[in-house]
Amino acid sequence: MRRMALLLIIIAGMACVVVCTAPASGHADEAATPVFVTKIPPGYRNWRLISVAHEAGNLNSFSAVLGNDIAIKAYREGKLPFPDGTIIAALHYRFVASEENDKVFGRPQSFVPGAPTNVQFMVKDSKKYAATGGWGFGHFQDGKALTGAPMQTCFPCHQLTKATDLVFTHYAP
Amino acid sequence: MRRMALLLIIIAGMACVVVCTAPASGHADEAATPVFVTKIPPGYRNWRLISVAHEAGNLNSFSAVLGNDIAIKAYREGKLPFPDGTIIAALHYRFVASEENDKVFGRPQSFVPGAPTNVQFMVKDSKKYAATGGWGFGHFQDGKALTGAPMQTCFPCHQLTKATDLVFTHYAP
Image (cartoon, rainbow over all chains, first blue to last red; front, top):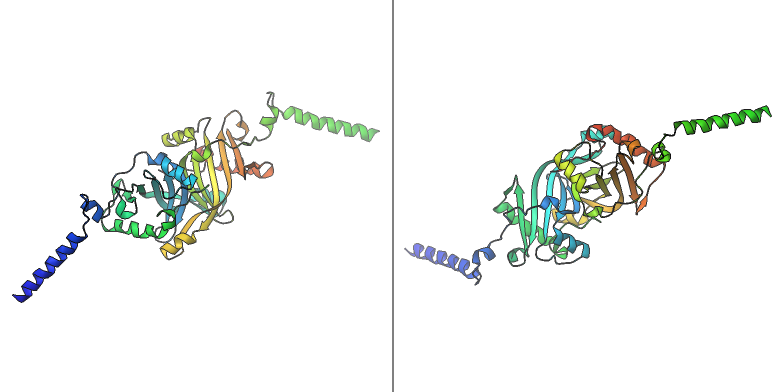
């Protein structure tokens, strides 16, 4: 009986922690848990180039990083933090050798995008995404949004680039 | 005196060869020697993405390949040969490791564009560039057009991609 009472006290205490840490605003759910980008921003494949990148190792990816007009303007003006409305798209492909080009060059040296793997987005909305530094993170594979645990890793990693408002990619002139 | 007469005959013969091989049209010079792109097409940095590429070895380059509206439309519709007015731009940078990103990942794996090296163009104009498959080739370093012997290598190399109208780069979806 005493053990049951103790258990109830512990459960009550845990409930208190949950209630007490929930903010007073009407958007308790949104503020308490990160909000992710769940819809692909339309027309992103027509946006202008920010830069390119290659991640070796397990990722083995080739990236083209594009930005909407607000993103491109901010990059070119060196405006930090990025204004609300900024959207940055990272189009990822497999990093593959081009047999076709290598034949021409006469040696293995040419690498091109293979199959598309995913498209990631960073959407700046300082209110909606207040809990994650003003950025909403999105990851789409075959048009489907990734959710859950893997998405929890975006913000902590991007926090390591605070000097550039959580954005890794620099503008390629 | 007889040697002088012989020399004159030889010179006259050489002149004849030059005159005889020049085409009958009023654009003798343009048709007889390859014509290169000598002016940077305005606004190319705002064009849309065709693809990305990396050349290892001595080139060690990172490329972003962009296209004007005519190029993008032709690529998306799979239209070959490319129509007149097509312009393809290849922006080249050094291929460098990103110390900044590698610190975050905890291992050397991230590669980004370093200093810009050159910008190359292919301009389709089937009349003006008839002698080089309808394509004018351009190579600009610090805004200055490359001319002469190195430019003579563009067309022979691009001729090895006849199936795609002399264009190496495929469209990245």
